[in-house]
Amino acid sequence: MDSASGVRLEELDEETCWRLVASVPVGRIAWNETGGPVVLPVNHVVADGTVVVRTGAWSGLERHVDDSDVAYEVDEVDEATRAGWSVLVRGLAEVSYDDDAGARPEPWAGGARPVTVRVHPRSISGRRLVVDRDPQES
Image 1: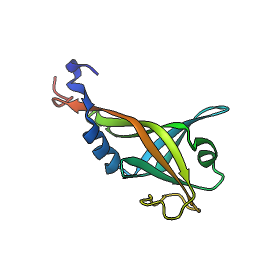
Image 2: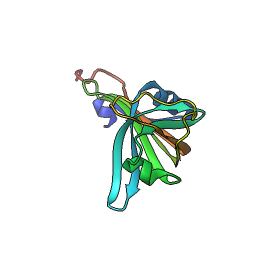
Image 3: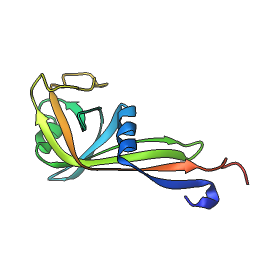
Image 4: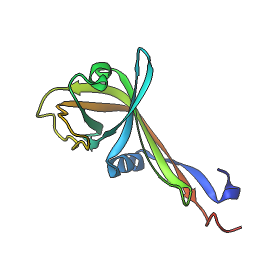
């Protein structure tokens, strides 16, 4: 959106990006499989400068991401004001089967989720749409 709409785009610093990722419980993890890109919504926590998710044994996530490049995206949007933000973490995924893997999110979906996937970031970036004035004003 342009300045005429009263909404501007601002880049977010790394500290703000991490704070925003930690502020919401759900994001989307993306990876490549033989058939093409896959994007999956998952619960997460931020721990020790990484994003941590849980998945089931033999899931597509567990089978395809270990030691692979992934992307993790979180966002929040207010459709009424057209404001919001988005953060993208790009990094290397590490799959762990250790029950003592540290901080782990509590999955919303039922069923066993014994596998931990930790995203070690190579980069984190974010953008925010900021409302400078009421979009109804004109």
